[in-house]
View (cartoon, rainbow, N blue to C red):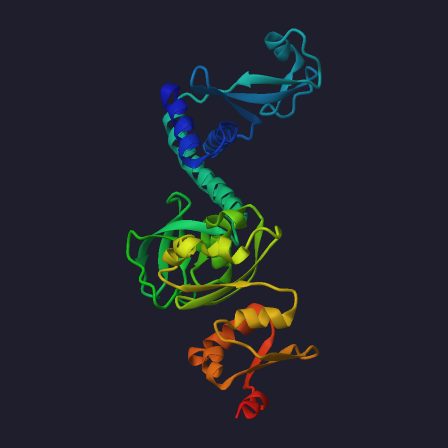
Length: 354
């Protein structure tokens, strides 16, 4: 590997792999040294030096200077009289570098070092990608769907197509279809190193995906004026998101929904039509629970603080609405607020009415 070929190799690796030039040079020198050592019987102390200006490398044997007559290991030592021919200022104990002859081995060394370099670059790139992706765990990544395998996993290309990630069956939304070439947003939930490969796990069902979408798509949430307090999801069907505002002049619910739902629609489309209820958070559990159960009207709420259970009383005509289809409204309210929800018909009020 000489001249333009060497310079071109460094440039390509730097651009395609995102590895700094200094690291590539160190890896190249190490790869060349490894290739040479494997092909000689002796054990000299060798040094490889790349000359980027000339686009080639040179190999030197490093030898310690010893007194004349004290030479015991010619591979690693040189007598003072011989060393003085190389450097007139050298002293006993100094290290001199002598050009090492690799004539006849150049082609073999070039091929072997290229193989070693490829392995080292792959490992370095895996380590770098692992660090980058670890920092993105719990955040959104954009990916292109590649295929669905025989186990029901959806294979997704992320990070500019450099990494293949997996959407496990339990992380898929049942109502969504995953077609090859579709681009979606996912929550990155985990990264593991397995040898020279990465195992990257994505999710479309995680509640934090919805929270992150709010933070990235809605200006007041991105700016920190509106905060997402909690999220509850039945993925692909309905979600509840509790929000609050640090600015009393900003309506957090209106800021998230927008005029005629214009703002929230971006997120609804990304989640393939999932219905999203934006709820006003309150530090008062009764008020928070009542807000979360809307559109049902609540008459009264009794709190059992020890068991964190709320008995919610509603009119008879509000009971089915409060419970929701298949218990969904009550279930999502419980997840959102952190309280067990027990909805009851307000018998006393109904008796008084009759």
